[in-house]
Length: 171
Image (cartoon, rainbow, N blue to C red; front, side, top):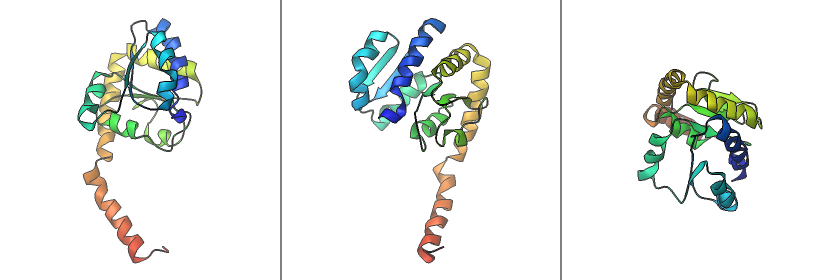
């Protein structure tokens, strides 16, 4: 989907080719946006493309190979990819759009850049790839934050929310 910012990612990748020459960007999943840009992505020589539905049993393979999660989104109400990446301890580089800044603290869980600023995004990626100690610190912070998204912890709050709604729907 357009909102995920594949066009931004292509611009960022073009910048990263010179900043971090051996950088590889994994794009996993499927959709019309990926199909539309696939030839261009392949020509860039930076992308590893997995244009297919990724079953739950295989998702971990991609997360474990990653150093960072890149969210060059144009817009986002929330991101399932972001929530999932936290449990793998992956620092995030993201455009500061939608609810992403409500989850990610800049400099703690990764880097937030202004919406549309692909140069700042590429700079943040290059910087984090070179600073292993900072990535490690951010990784620990992401794992701590992931505990807050644990369903076992959240389930009682959801249950109470729905009980209240059933008991007093106008509340």
